[in-house]
Image (cartoon, rainbow, N blue to C red; front, side, top):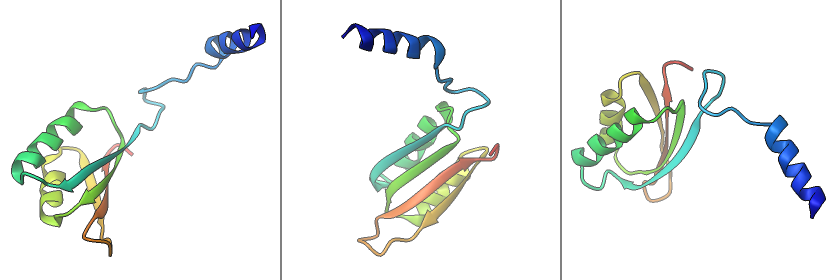
Length: 101
């Protein structure tokens, strides 16, 4: 047990991982479940959350509307997007990425 505590303490002191710096790539996956459930309201809400984030890449699942997805991409300043069509119940995958990468 003491060896485990020493190992954890040394790992904490010498191997700290830097998060959210100019040298990191911040990626998130997000299942939006039948996007957009409430049309433009959903687009505005997702836009505001992404704008507040400090992410570089976001992988999205369950995108049902390419029109609303394109509206989301167009509303996000400094972001681009890609929508991949799925053969399974129109549950498409999409990616958003910043212009900085």
